[in-house]
Image 1 (tube, one colour):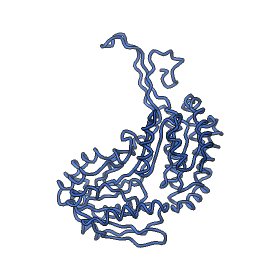
Image 2 (image 1 turned 135 degrees about the vertical axis):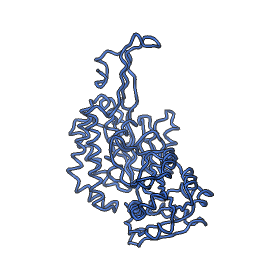
Image 3 (image 1 turned 180 degrees about the vertical axis):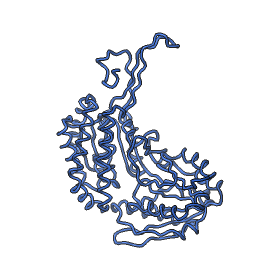
Image 4 (image 1 turned 120 degrees about the vertical axis):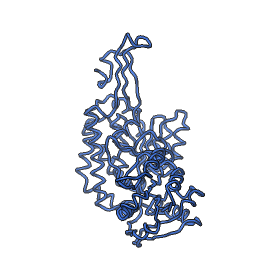
Length: 462
């Protein structure tokens, strides 16, 4: 655990680094990120082995996650060098502007200041110490303080040393990056005036408590929390008629991937033919949960839904040592309409709820009850599917990403990606935590009016 004196030292260093970081040119920031990416590549074998020992996640998965983590650092570096990471707007002076003479106005972005990042348990690289929040904040020119996740403490320390060394090699300001450990250290940092924004990935309960703390400060700050998500799926009647076997196989793979410990796991599936779905369904064995706390949470959420009088446990996967069995619960659309908790309760682990519906209107009524979610999927027919359009319209009100005939697990890092959604999926539905737009969370717009060119940020001197 990081004691209060050490937390103070790290926060003070981040505060001192804020101005040199803000003044660093785009090319310098890109060099920081490329240096981190090279470090991850160079130490990939040892890092993956250490992550495997601490999390029990399979080595192939961890190696792929490391590739993704280095890739996203390079992608942000590319966009910085290309000048496309942040949008700029320039209104030249115009004496004939219809509402009166217009001054020269140039709108750009400045870093928000030191950012506190809470690492996640389920992605020990991509959403942890050198993950997307860290990379996007550094790209924006912000110092970063990471609160390590207790699920992989040694990996967090090793990765933090790598990041610190690589930033130093790239000529970054001292104090640009720091690591703290322990619940109390995280709470202290959220309340510290030198922290200007928070990125969080974790449970709804923990995220809500920290969110309330961040916004109740004398100087409230942005809190970008990614929380719970049930990621509903609608199997249309036409889709079922055309692609039943493909849909069931894809669902089983997606729902059990990583032992169901993905924030994008399809947790609720609306089906027109429950019997036919179950007849085709084979559940695989799954691996251990990340830690005892997550395993306990999985068991509690599963039991809470399973004991509902209108819910049945329809399928149970094969048991494996030190791991739960995958489970499929079933219910009906009328039961959900009577108790929406059946489709709003996240079961974080290898379980999902199948909801049988009678017609398109009934399915739509169930979708209207879905709470904010990271993703929503429609499994339909490619040729003609009248049911799909209305469903997509309803789901777009509730989800950050709409998927057609694919599955939500596997979130690519790109310019157009949106990983967010209304509450309770996130605390900030207009932002994303994945993709290059994530950097916008940690910068704020500033308009410069009538300034001499020499005093403008470089990207506005045109």
